Amino acid sequence: MLLDTSLVCTKKSHENEPLTSFCKQCKVCICDKCGQTRHNHHTKVDIDQAAKEHKVDIEAITEKMKKGISDIKIDVERSRELSRKSREKIATARNKAMTSLEELMRVLKEHETTTLTSLDVIDETEKRSHATQLEHFQLSINQLQTSVEYCEAILDRNKSVEILQVHKGLIERCRGLLNAEKRNINKPLHTTLHNVTLVSPMRAMMLKK
Image (cartoon, rainbow, N blue to C red; front, top):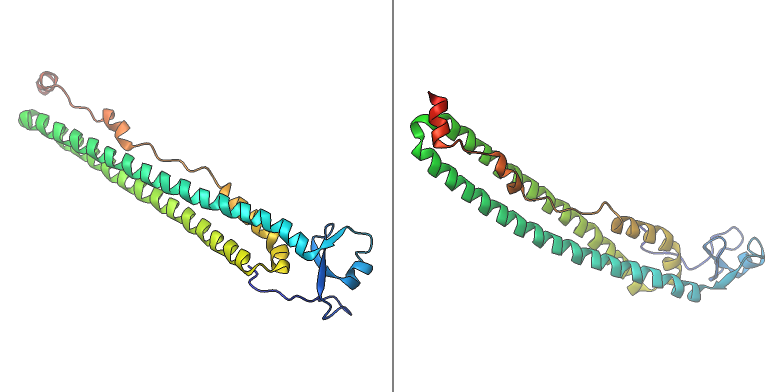
């Protein structure tokens, strides 16, 4: 990304001519000689006025990215809460499973192993999913924060040529970040706990026979 620019024209025979206008058709900054030659019949505006208009776009996209960061942080907190509740329900299910299995230890030893293994798998899978989701949120925050800082640096420098030259690419990149795939919080994995069932004591005894 552009961090510094020249304030003079670089066209052949126009060297050192100050950039004074912005060509709306070509979307470039031009000097007076350019305006009298290849851009003669194009619509041109004062470079500072053009920069002022484009600056509004950068300010707007910067605010949207800040809002995006705020939304992601809210999603992070929601995700943590869902994960906490999920872990609590997993722990409760584990305790119930242990209580039932202890009462039927002689006839349910194999079922005990299967049940606890399933709960462990759900627990580990949920933790990995949560960790991955947090990494995704943090990556999005980092990308948006970097772009916010870059935009704010441009706005602080307030150089008309720089604003005009980076405007299109910058806005497209920022919009791309904001329009990235919609973030979804994973459903808590405890919703699958109903699949981990316990055989009733009577049925277990009948099956054992």
